[in-house]
Image (cartoon, rainbow, N blue to C red; front, top):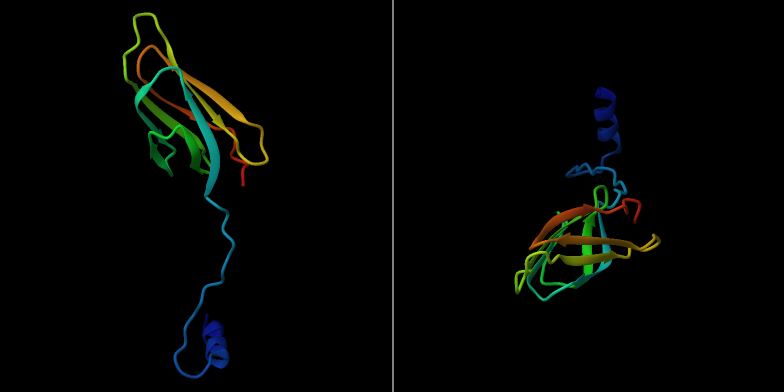
Length: 124
């Protein structure tokens, strides 16, 4: 430790001395991917939450995902509630660059409030 301080003194420029940490290239913790959402009926509200990004009433666009744990939570409130025995769905399509297209269908007998983990953790 004393050697380090001695070297700092010898190599330091005259005047104010500042220490700068070495810059490291950190891996990106986020990845943006295009998506599209198709609904089986008109929705009153649509909410998409990825933990890194939140969007309301967007049926297509780009999602910012956590690169280490990519997941999407979806909430859909329908304009008209489904009749007894009717199922409603929302089809999510995610196209991460360089990877196969991922499609997931959320379905429910009422409003949708669910999540899915995406198999795109290798996306850059």
